[in-house]
Image 1: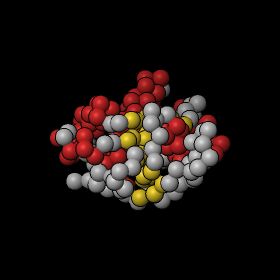
Image 2: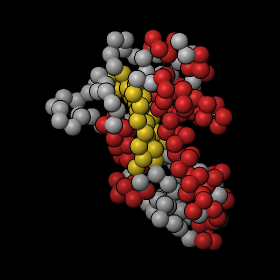
Image 3: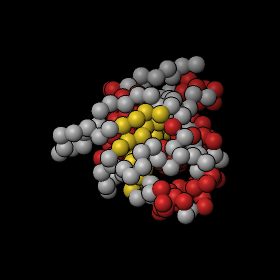
Image 4: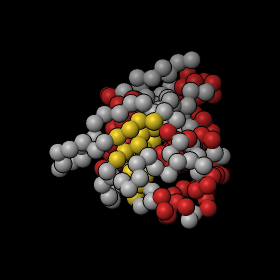
Length: 203
């Protein structure tokens, strides 16, 4: 069972991203605020985990539960063009902070998957919201795990849409990651507007 929160009594948002490693497509980020009391009453949260540890079926079954039961949630994407301009690490952090901006309530504390973060001061405010980075946070805290599920499923849906536009790259299955199939398609067909030009696009 994952931990419900880090600091009890605070409005706490968990943040995570999906899609740092692919050669193509946006990186997606999510922020989720959960109510520990509500979480205890929802049986599905018992199998909430890091999205990488779940099957597609489990992730898509959890997504509407998270969206329905969360106090607040938001998902955003950061484009390949921004990734090329800023680098993928900066865009991952930027995406998570944009997701925080879109929450319907202001968190008092932030939990971030990983070990990198930048001070986050909401627009119109003067003080930074305290944050803790947690390595393997998506397998430790429910709010981060919920964010990981949303970011992953929304990115997968996005890659399916791109696959319909460029089916030759196999994005329906490889989701833009650097597989042999993807490299072979780049060599044969060239790059698309969705490829990250600052990444290594040659095998």
